[in-house]
Amino acid sequence: MPSIPYRLVRFDDEPFAIDPVEFDRGIAEIARYWTEIDDDLADTDPDRAARIREDRLRIAKFDYARTGYWHDPESIDAICDMPYLPDGGYDAEAGESRGHLLDLYLPHSAMVRGGATLPVFIDIHGGGFTYGYKELNRNFNMHLAARGFAVFSLNYRPAPQTDLRGQLADVQNALAWIRDHAGDWPISPHNIFLTGDSAGGALAWYTLLIERNPDAAQAFGIASPSRLPIAGAALVSGVFDLTERPDAPSARTQLEQTVGREFFDGLDGAMPLAPFAAAAQTALPPLYLLTSSDDFIQAETLGLATALACAGRDFELHDVKVAPTETLGHVFPVCMSWLPESQRALQQIHDFAYRNCR
Image 1 (cartoon, rainbow, N blue to C red):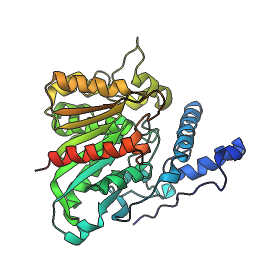
Image 2: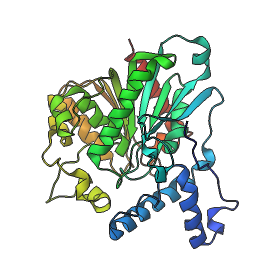
Image 3: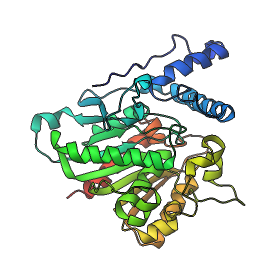
């Protein structure tokens, strides 16, 4: 079993008391616990590598402030760093890929009781397709597990290690591994749900399309979807419309500034990138959608909800109205699971999933 060479550490002093240059250097090292910073950028165009590193470091500074609140509930067991492909591991020089590992978190009581009834969530973390690993979402997933789920938390290769098709292929390989190994744990083989936030919400959405629509699978280069029986999905502050719009601002245009146009190679005009076409042409399972009024991509979730409504699909939308004197922001239940609003969201996700179990 591979062993993570990083651990979560914090500065001895508060960030405001540290020299800015030293703070950046320290964050670059600390954040390797939950993301790449620059270890995978040696073969990338220098200008793009600089943009990616700057973006990763900026987000890592933001996430660092929250690490003091991260904790594992005592009732949850963690089985970590299982390779879902043979090269899964931390030794890049030996050809291993950290992007091909996954964790499982499940209530200890499930191990005691046995059986095969515990509902399952499979989580795909966010990070603009270039930032983060499963450790970024560990706190959220542990607390989701504490509400009565087994939670698989996936790594995938971040850009520039691969493109969008490669990331979706990683997710498919992880789903196939879960399908083949589900009998190793006391979990339900059919009450299985996806969840994802931000870019992970996009990957979860596209994974649903791949599983349910042969044209989408072909567009994304997936010859044999996992056929895992996905009963529903909880999508948190996702980005869902990645169509190319040369004459108007778009999520894709913003992403291309960091990951490059080649991240979307082979997908121009592909049906899955357009929510209205995808929702109309795909028999989707029930969906839970969450955003907030101060989420900078709130419109993405509202746009997907509109597409689902027009197609007559089964979904529920939760758009949290934030007071002018408060802040929730992007993917708040994932980043700040301790907030009252996040606790309500976790309960809503629990209720949504249990309502759709059979």
